[in-house]
Image (spheres, one colour):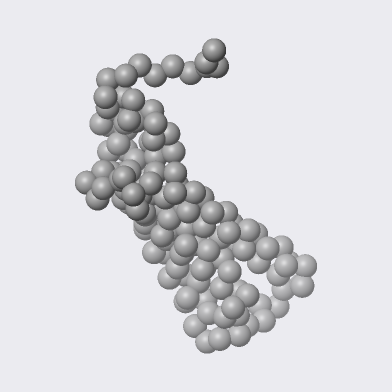
Length: 132
């Protein structure tokens, strides 16, 4: 649908939503891959659910951000965009609540520092710096 905006405004807006959608998707896939969600992580681990919520939320943000290129002239385009953003935001909110649960359980590494979490769980010492 024509929103009555100049072409350069459309390019800037759609370029930003497309870029944001792509980066949310890449971030979610990297998080799931890094945390071995389909391998060693189990459904009992909060990190599993945080990673899945963030990945699916990223996929939905990707669909919302790229919908202008697929469905722009289809009836219901705006609703498709809004539903994807709404559900994706809900999943990110659930993931954020689970991150607080992890933090309260002294899981300081959160989701992208899985090795720190494992070292703390087995009672190992964690140190940053260059090893010699």
